[in-house]
Image 1 (cartoon, rainbow, N blue to C red):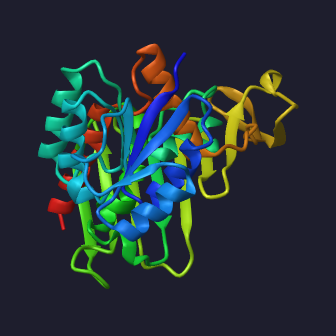
Image 2: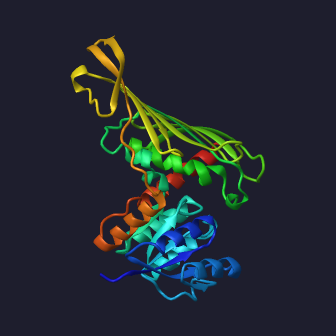
Image 3: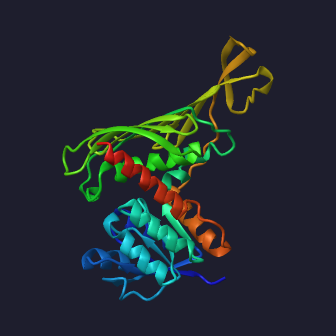
Length: 322
């Protein structure tokens, strides 16, 4: 099987990380780096053995690309690459507007190309630890707080940070958003730097999300409440704690610790704390690997353009409430 010739478009923080990891992938030959900034572009290209190009038009056609350019040019870059027949890994958000996302999705659907969106939290070790559990949320609370970094101010905190949790909510609930209340404040930039949103889903689940890019201390936590269990996920630490009511005979001593018993309408139940096994991962490397596997096997992307578009649609609805 020949190596997939790949280009990285954009050499900011994420683009540089992608370039480093692609250079290590056994099935990929990173041949090109594209960035209008010659200093940054040349630096990354030389570091990882690729050739620098100032524009997409100058770059030779590759098998695949990673689009890690500023959000405002995702649309133009994606359309050029898909029309040129290149598989696309597009960093989140998929595009600056839902309308642009829909066009990318339609174009991708009409092609036989893999288009994957970089919602990296899907690959977080804590999220992956839930794979063997039945998740049916009734209430979700999320906090995503970050220190201010001037590199991501081309979009609001909703599209920059909260969109990670919007994607996770849509994925966990498998349900449509039917109601939104939100408030936000622009503090250091021209767009909201802190936002709180309350989302109601058709399933009956309610979620409360807070995102800030002006916090003194970073935090990435998600708390999921459902019938008979409460799950606490620390996405920064990659850890999970689950408190559940179970029948005594179902206790799994390998990772469940009994905390006591309680009388319920269904009889005596045991309260346990469950610490699901968490495997340490490099989430970006894992999402890259899933992208390559999709190209090689023709299977659906782990995060499709349709899912990326839906996350942007909900983000826009939140923004309209402010």
